[in-house]
Length: 356
Ligand SMILES: NC(=O)c1ccc[n+]([C@@H]2O[C@H](COP(=O)([O-])OP(=O)(O)OC[C@H]3O[C@@H](n4cnc5c(N)ncnc54)[C@H](O)[C@@H]3O)[C@@H](O)[C@H]2O)c1
Image (cartoon, rainbow, N blue to C red; front, side):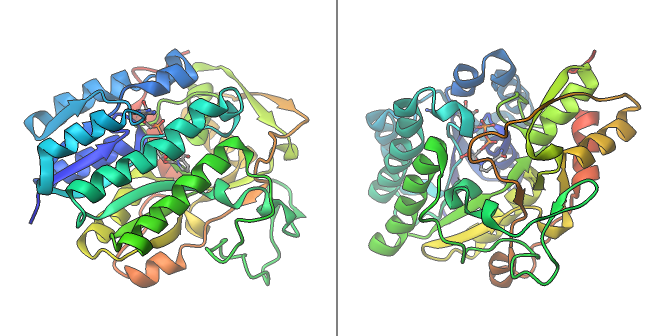
């Protein structure tokens, strides 16, 4: 069996967790990351610290390449060298922020959409049999979830229990006729292209449409990294700005570990052109108000928040992922972290770095 894994965004939250996991299984990992998160979000966002930690932990099993995924020739050269030794591709490099994309739409599209076809084409030419896993986003559904009949409760918005999506929004929701944001649209382009390389070329591709993905490997910044940024603000006594919906917007959260075990399950039994909504579901979700309450309990500190009346354009008021399709295909896979466990781990892992 081919034993090299190519992971883009390898210094980021998801990429770095994937590096650890697959190196731990004895595979050689080739990482691609140019620390562009530092360009997107400034010093808070740079993933350099995580890369250094990774290199120390994983040692010789990991080789780093600071290639820009927009650099088609650079990727092709990398894959030419690796050839059919590539047994798995995880494409997690991206411009990940909804809000940032509108600042530089060309950059966002070049990274998210063009970078993805560059990766797909390099894989098709050099390792067509390798499962190709892509981290898409629930933003492909645009603002359609905001038309759900939400009911206001004390600390959160909620769906009536008899609603078809109460257990979570599944892949049957349309991706058309909604406002996606510039980011959502560039991810839709990538998402559809990954499906197309599955359908058209028969490649074992999978699109994972994530809700909130989180974990201690997140370089928490205001524009990206919800739970990690909540914890960082409480620990550093920074003011967190809550944008609209009375702070009651609901997010489901999945720990990067649980997402990577899902990737592992797909790697072992790949399928063609799959699409999965993936998140913490009913097992792991919270509103902003609830997240701060848990963070305060864990840290013993009081959160500082500022409420901004206007919500972020197209921001979801309520999102819980329906993961039944994935669970039916991979019945042995289970979520292991809920929101309090995730927040506690983020707290423990960052005690040295995040101090008031
Ligand atoms: N974190 C979330 O809540 C979330 C939710 C849904 C989907 N996703 C998706 O999951 C994927 C991974 O997200 P993450 O949270 O790990 O993001 P991240 O920002 O932590 O990691 C992405 C990494 O990609 C690198 N990168 C960016 N542009 C690059 C380029 N042009 N060339 C090479 N490397 C580049 C960055 O430096 C960063 O280290 C992304 O596709 C994102 O859209 C994330």
